[in-house]
Every structure is written in C-alpha cells, then in structure tokens.
Length: 524
Image (cartoon, rainbow, N blue to C red; front, side, top):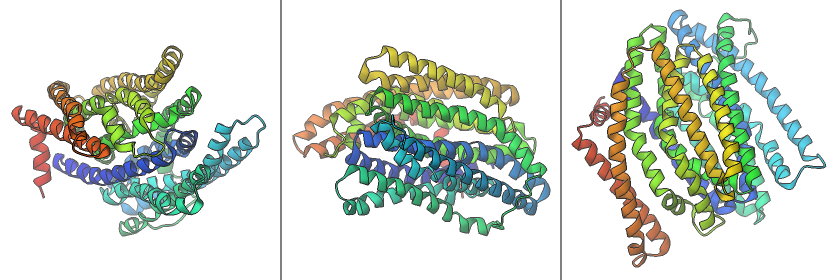
C-alpha cells in the first residue's frame, strides 16, 4: 500500500470500529444501569475475560500474526490456489483444537462450581464462564476469517463484525431482560447466552465476502505441509508472548476481585474509555499495517517499511496525545455523563472508575505504539523479540501491582494497578522501538519525537481549556437545565472547546499530519 492508501484503509477500519465502539459504549451504559459495580458485573467481566484471552491468543493475536505473513507470501510466490489450500488446512486444525479446548473449559468450570469451598463470587463467575467459554471457538474462527480478508486488503466486513456483539447484547438487554423479570442473576445468565449468539453471528457475516474472494470452504486434515509448519513455528513464540500477556490480564482481573467485588467492574469501565479511541485509530492502524508490512517484507522493501512506521507513529502522536490529556483532565465528568442514569451506577461508581481512568489515560500513547511495533516484527517473521520483551513487561507489571496493592489505600489500589500497566507497557515499547531500529534503519526517530513534543504542548493547552469549560459551565447550565442535561452539555462543551483549541493550534503550527490526513480523505 501507498501512504495515502494506508490512511484511507485506516479510515475504513476506524469508521467501522467507531460504530462498534459507539455501540459498545451504549452496551456498557445498559450493563452499568442494570449491574453497576456489583458482584454480578465483576463476575460477568471476569468470566468474559477468559474466552477473550483465547480470542487474543489464537484469534486476532498469535494466529493472525503468524497466518497473514505466510498467507501473503504464499499468494505472492505460488498463487491463490496454494494460499487457499493452506488456509483450509489451518482452519481445520484451528477448529479441531479449539473445539477440544472449549469442551475441556466447560468441564473444568462445571467441576469448579461443585467444589465444597467454592465461595459465592467464584460460583457466580464460574457459572457465567461455563456458558460463555465456547465463544472461544466462534470468535477465533471469526478472527481467522478476518485475517484472510485483511490479506486481500478487504477490511470493511471484518471491521463491522464486532459491532454484532454489541448489537446483540443491547437487544438482549432491551427485549429479553423484561421477559426474565427483575432477578439480576437471571439477567446476567441471559446476557452470557447472548455472547454465544454474537460469536456465531460474527462468523456468519464474513462468509459471503470469503466466498467472493474464492474461499473453497472445505476441510483439510493434511497438516504435514511446510507452509502450515512455517506458520506454526512463527505462531509458537507469538502464542507464548500472547499467553504471557493475556495471563497477566487474567491475573489482573483476579487480583482486582481480591481487592474487592467492585474493583474489576471499576477497572472495566475505565478501560472502556481507553479502548474507545484506541480501537478507532490505533487498533485500526495495526489491522491495516500487518498486511502492509508483510507485503513490504515479502518484497524486501525495508525503506518503504521504515517510512510507513515513521508516518504511522507521527499520526498516532497527533491524535492520541490530545485524547490522553482529555481523558486525564475530564475523567470524572466523562464517566459521570456516560454511565450515571439513575440505575445501579452512581456517584461512588463514577469516583472509583475515574481514579483508574486518570492513571490509564497516559497509556493511550504507549498502547498505540504497540499497534505499530508488534506488527512490524511479525511481518519480518520475528515473533521471538516481542515475546522476550513481553515477559519482562509482565514481570514488571506484576511486581508493581503487588507493590501498589500492599501500599496504597483500599479504594486506590485498583488505580495503582492501572498505573503499573501503563508504566510496564512504556518500558516494553521503549525496548521494542530500540530493537526495531536495528532491523529497520530508515525510521526517522527525530521527526517522531518532534511531532510528539509539539502535540504534547498543544494538548496541555487544550486540556487546560477543556477543564476550565467543564469546571465552570456545569454549575451555570444547572440553573437552566435539568441536572442530567446540564452534565451532558457541560461535557460536550468541554470536548468541543478542547478539540477546537487543539485544531487551531495545529493549524497555527502548520502540522504536516493535518495536511496528510486531509489529502488522504480527498484522494479517490
């Protein structure tokens, strides 16, 4: 892809991701209304983390990272027929393995429920996990389908697919909850079954696009194939790295449950604020960059890869730096406006979630860098380096978690966990950037650093303006409007004022990223 094509493809993925994140935000508002930061909310989020661990490991994580470069290389050198033959073998192997994993998981959770010393919070968590665990098979097959479509630079269908999860869960809460009565436990169970239905829908929606590109839709158990072995060899270190990282995520959830039944839910709501801009821009960029980098690597175009890395990091600095500052200064206002609707999510839930969000916010810049660095290593078929760095990052994160849990006051411990995640990831991304510069010499670090410093200065001024508008407009609007409308209007005014200030400052600085984005949008 050329530079403008990358930006436009990121725009396509980002647009559908915006739809998904918007629906996800609406979904979370309904969940917060019904469950707040209760034990049921925390149990649902912890239970859903478990199949998501496998999704990120075998789906859009290690499997996609290993599959896309080999699939593109096979298409480039041997043609579409050979590539589809390889895809059929990988799909069959993946489905067989994940079916076995799903059966084992359901059995283990069933045994856990029956243990005599299983407390209420773990019994509720295991019951929900038993229902949702087969989601791992469905979502991983959806992710493999996404990898194939992305290899053909078709991003729209797979980018839309995650929206189905949010749509289905919203429909379940609106249409099915009234039918099961007011019992929160029954509603949580119905919501868990909705997750399974959503997994099947995400697979089904991609089938027509796969057929259009020539997918044979057949099983093949001839796994003794050099291309499959090559993919598995690449996947091994990547899976190990993903396993370490995702195991760390699960440990974080369990540690949060240990802090208090409210802590996993408070961390979840704050994370959602981070994932919203991260998914729209950074995750979308990572989705586009893996096949782009893989094409550069297959043709030996290291200079082009270096230029793409440089431009991607500059654009991420331009967008993510103000987003991080905005979330930091407006954390209580945003969370209160989004989730406080008179249900189970009240002022205490807002305060707890905002404490975590203020420490998560700077991580937007760090987490965004990972969406560029990691695909670059995978495209070079180096899956070992991210693993080594990932292990160090996990160890540092766990160490800091324990330190903060033991030293901070009770209702700040979860905020310390957020800070440890950001600090550990910052160290890991610094190391990955340094090691990547040894492989790709044409990365223009000075230009990247210059962009970040400029936009950080602009973002700080933007943050001051947004905070002042939020601070003084809500009391004034409260005399004219009902309380909730005043709260929403104050946040909207603060975001608009901050965004306008940042845009004017970028124009004054003649930001090249602004021109490049504008050019990519206009280019047909």
